Image (tube, protein in one colour):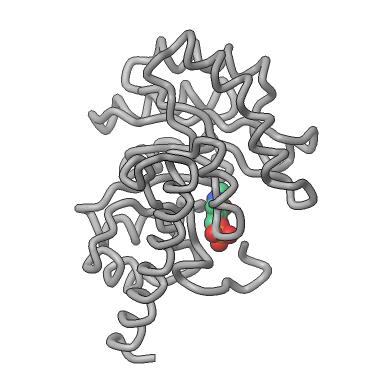
Length: 232
Ligand SMILES: *Cc1c(COP(=O)(O)O)cnc(C)c1O
């Protein structure tokens, strides 16, 4: 596909997506401007990042350090979000380009990210990832762990707690999954009023997430097209 036709395709997808986000926000009496669209570009080339950046997108997400680093370098004017399971030994690298990490779920990761933020002389926004099932292999902390992690982020030198992130299990109705986040979200906000952001919603379920208060939607497929199955 030529650059021009890919640009036209991405522009169409982006317009359609903004329409979905706007309609979902309106249905909930919310302003579309409260919702940040993060383009999840994993498996797609840096040239797509450039096209989307030139179309006005500013927030990009990736889930693997090795892949994210060169793409972030190709669009340094953009804000990079790290979304995936993060190993402690990658925290330093991730903190060199990511302004926000959505997948923080354990104490040693908080300490490592804070060291990375200090070393890179930047502040990193942190979403704590809430697990919505007991299968923790997908990452995420339980509601009781979330409050301890929040206290730790709060006392870190260069981390800023912004809210919660959740990924609904594949076999669960997203409305059900997202409604389970409400109690822990309000407890968190009561203790940390600045931690009201909610990173929730992907291509298939962003309407549900917006109904349940999502402030950051993370969209790959609906914007860029399908990924090879093995690389989701
Ligand atoms: C891949 C990914 C997304 C985007 O999913 P789509 O269904 O392609 O929109 C969102 N969040 C996380 C954590 C991801 O890994």
